[in-house]
Length: 298
Image (cartoon, rainbow, N blue to C red; front, side, top):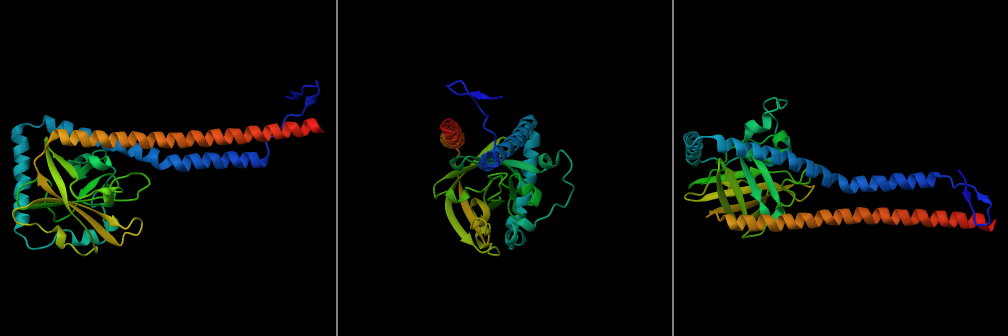
């Protein structure tokens, strides 16, 4: 198809050049690169939320007798652990990436079977399933219980240690854990109870240093553990929380604030993408105008 100029003479249609094609491909690649981490993380968040919802629904279906029986079982395990002098998880903290699965992970109920709770960190907008062991597969989906640490059900003489990855392109997990500060709160949901913990200590240690993970007599601690520095992973970041009374209003307010920040980030990403499209469109229009002007002058 040809284009008519004002003097009635037909001007040849401008052909798409190799440069135009390459610019289009580069623009598309740029959009995909910018949006991939966000889209991938959102998909994993949806999967995590489904797993969390399943756990919560199963907990509600349990009778009080069943819940108490399970609590008693975990409490006995914690009491036995408190009497042992050894440090928890020395092998696992040395290299979280080397943990291996001891069973098939191809079964649909694999994650459901290993879910024992929910970890919520409102200040960084994190809600993750808690798994009962640390393996490479489970680490990619949520927070995992370090071997030799207390079960995260609270109580005196307990110290649960929850591990999480940082820097995965497919999921946020513990990526923003360094943003936590002394006084921030996080929450653990087990069965239908919610336990509150306030950050009282933040340390960076060598992978084989587990002194800070020991049970302290009379205390109720939970430590969040991840690799640091980012992408180097030569040390371990330990964010410890001490048990405090749970106040639902505080959790709700913190979650609302985190959600507002997340919406702001989403709007920012969308704005950048729109600007890229607008700039690309203007460049193309200027090139077409320049091309038509050159034809008119001939």
